[in-house]
Amino acid sequence: MILGLGALSLINIQLVAMRQRVREIGVRRAFGASSGRIFFAVFLESLVATTVAGLVGIAVVVAVLRSDWVVTSLFYGIQDIPPFPLRAAFVGLAASIIVGAVAGFIPALVALRVKVIDAIRF
Image (cartoon, rainbow, N blue to C red; front, side):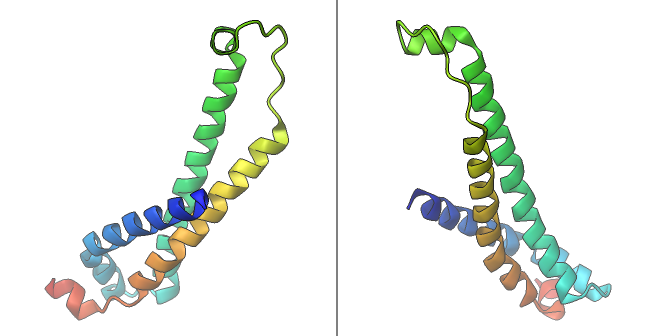
């Protein structure tokens, strides 16, 4: 449910960004960009952004777990710090990629529907 709400929020942000970039998309279409290229550019933008965010999140968690003073101050009396599970990192990265793909699909479809004349006039 949390991932779904995050994807809805990301879809909303991407749709607002597409409304702001109508002129750019119109100019690209006027210079001969195919609808497939427009779709792929918008879709890939969302996918790359969420993948980078997932990698940064994993790096922050690993850095926090590697710092002994943070773990020992949060969990008083702990002697052995468990290693970070690599499977959890892969699952988290896969989840961020899937959310990015879902959230990038709808704005990419909206970008396809931009007409050249409306984009230039806008």
